[in-house]
Image (cartoon, rainbow, N blue to C red; front, side, top):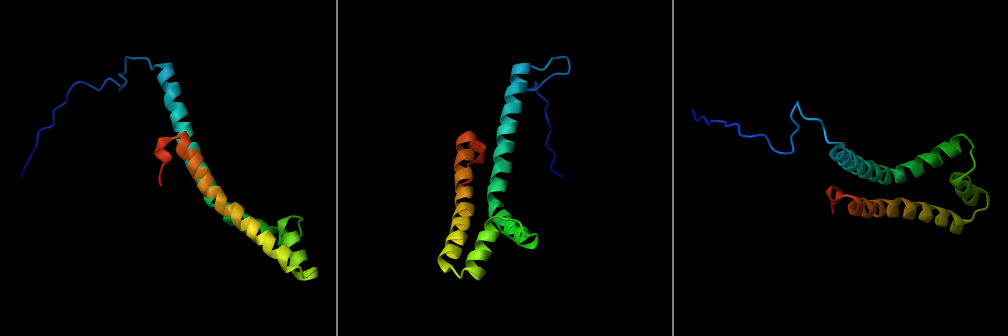
Length: 118
Protein backbone atom coordinates (compact mmCIF):
# COMPACT_ATOMS: atom_id res chain seq x y z
CA UNK A 1 0.00 0.00 0.00
CA UNK A 2 1.53 3.27 -1.16
CA UNK A 3 0.88 6.18 1.20
CA UNK A 4 1.96 9.74 0.74
CA UNK A 5 2.26 12.33 3.43
CA UNK A 6 0.23 15.50 3.21
CA UNK A 7 2.02 18.57 4.46
CA UNK A 8 0.20 21.68 5.50
CA UNK A 9 2.07 24.85 4.76
CA UNK A 10 1.30 28.48 5.29
CA UNK A 11 -2.10 29.60 3.97
CA UNK A 12 -2.16 31.29 0.59
CA UNK A 13 -2.20 35.10 0.80
CA UNK A 14 -5.60 35.24 -0.97
CA UNK A 15 -7.39 33.17 1.65
CA UNK A 16 -9.21 34.96 4.42
CA UNK A 17 -8.42 34.12 8.01
CA UNK A 18 -11.26 34.09 10.51
CA UNK A 19 -9.77 37.01 12.39
CA UNK A 20 -9.42 39.15 9.26
CA UNK A 21 -12.12 41.45 8.00
CA UNK A 22 -12.90 40.99 4.31
CA UNK A 23 -11.55 43.69 2.05
CA UNK A 24 -14.58 45.51 0.56
CA UNK A 25 -12.69 46.42 -2.61
CA UNK A 26 -11.75 42.78 -3.23
CA UNK A 27 -15.31 41.62 -2.56
CA UNK A 28 -16.62 44.22 -5.01
CA UNK A 29 -14.24 42.98 -7.70
CA UNK A 30 -15.18 39.34 -7.09
CA UNK A 31 -18.90 40.15 -7.23
CA UNK A 32 -18.41 42.09 -10.47
CA UNK A 33 -16.53 39.20 -12.05
CA UNK A 34 -19.15 36.67 -10.94
CA UNK A 35 -21.98 38.87 -12.25
CA UNK A 36 -20.19 39.35 -15.59
CA UNK A 37 -19.56 35.63 -16.07
CA UNK A 38 -23.07 34.56 -15.05
CA UNK A 39 -24.57 37.29 -17.25
CA UNK A 40 -22.63 35.93 -20.21
CA UNK A 41 -23.76 32.38 -19.51
CA UNK A 42 -27.43 33.37 -19.30
CA UNK A 43 -27.19 35.62 -22.38
CA UNK A 44 -25.75 32.70 -24.36
CA UNK A 45 -28.60 30.46 -23.21
CA UNK A 46 -31.22 33.03 -24.18
CA UNK A 47 -29.62 33.53 -27.61
CA UNK A 48 -29.63 29.77 -28.19
CA UNK A 49 -33.29 29.53 -27.25
CA UNK A 50 -34.37 32.49 -29.39
CA UNK A 51 -35.34 30.24 -32.31
CA UNK A 52 -37.46 28.09 -30.01
CA UNK A 53 -39.04 31.25 -28.63
CA UNK A 54 -39.96 32.52 -32.09
CA UNK A 55 -41.54 29.20 -32.98
CA UNK A 56 -43.42 29.05 -29.70
CA UNK A 57 -44.63 32.64 -30.21
CA UNK A 58 -46.02 31.68 -33.62
CA UNK A 59 -47.83 28.73 -32.03
CA UNK A 60 -49.34 30.81 -29.20
CA UNK A 61 -50.38 33.62 -31.57
CA UNK A 62 -52.20 31.15 -33.81
CA UNK A 63 -53.94 29.39 -30.93
CA UNK A 64 -55.15 32.55 -29.17
CA UNK A 65 -55.70 34.71 -32.31
CA UNK A 66 -53.16 37.32 -31.26
CA UNK A 67 -51.83 39.82 -33.79
CA UNK A 68 -48.18 39.48 -34.62
CA UNK A 69 -45.79 37.51 -36.77
CA UNK A 70 -48.09 34.53 -37.08
CA UNK A 71 -50.96 36.74 -38.20
CA UNK A 72 -48.80 38.11 -41.02
CA UNK A 73 -47.63 34.61 -41.89
CA UNK A 74 -51.07 33.01 -41.95
CA UNK A 75 -52.76 35.88 -43.81
CA UNK A 76 -50.04 35.90 -46.46
CA UNK A 77 -50.03 32.11 -46.84
CA UNK A 78 -53.70 31.18 -46.80
CA UNK A 79 -55.83 34.25 -47.45
CA UNK A 80 -53.76 36.33 -49.88
CA UNK A 81 -51.87 33.38 -51.39
CA UNK A 82 -48.71 35.52 -51.29
CA UNK A 83 -45.80 33.10 -51.29
CA UNK A 84 -43.14 35.82 -51.39
CA UNK A 85 -44.34 37.41 -48.15
CA UNK A 86 -44.57 34.02 -46.47
CA UNK A 87 -41.02 33.18 -47.49
CA UNK A 88 -39.83 36.61 -46.41
CA UNK A 89 -41.36 36.27 -42.94
CA UNK A 90 -39.83 32.82 -42.43
CA UNK A 91 -36.42 33.88 -43.75
CA UNK A 92 -36.34 37.00 -41.54
CA UNK A 93 -37.29 35.01 -38.44
CA UNK A 94 -34.64 32.40 -39.27
CA UNK A 95 -31.94 35.03 -39.83
CA UNK A 96 -32.77 36.75 -36.54
CA UNK A 97 -32.65 33.47 -34.65
CA UNK A 98 -29.42 32.39 -36.33
CA UNK A 99 -27.60 35.74 -36.05
CA UNK A 100 -28.38 36.22 -32.36
CA UNK A 101 -26.21 33.36 -31.11
CA UNK A 102 -22.88 34.36 -32.74
CA UNK A 103 -23.49 38.02 -31.87
CA UNK A 104 -24.05 37.22 -28.19
CA UNK A 105 -21.05 34.85 -28.19
CA UNK A 106 -18.76 37.61 -29.50
CA UNK A 107 -20.08 40.17 -27.00
CA UNK A 108 -19.63 37.71 -24.13
CA UNK A 109 -16.12 36.79 -25.29
CA UNK A 110 -15.17 40.47 -25.23
CA UNK A 111 -16.76 40.96 -21.80
CA UNK A 112 -15.18 37.93 -20.10
CA UNK A 113 -12.34 35.71 -21.27
CA UNK A 114 -13.83 32.64 -19.56
CA UNK A 115 -16.73 32.70 -22.05
CA UNK A 116 -14.49 32.16 -25.08
CA UNK A 117 -15.62 28.76 -26.21
CA UNK A 118 -14.89 28.96 -29.90
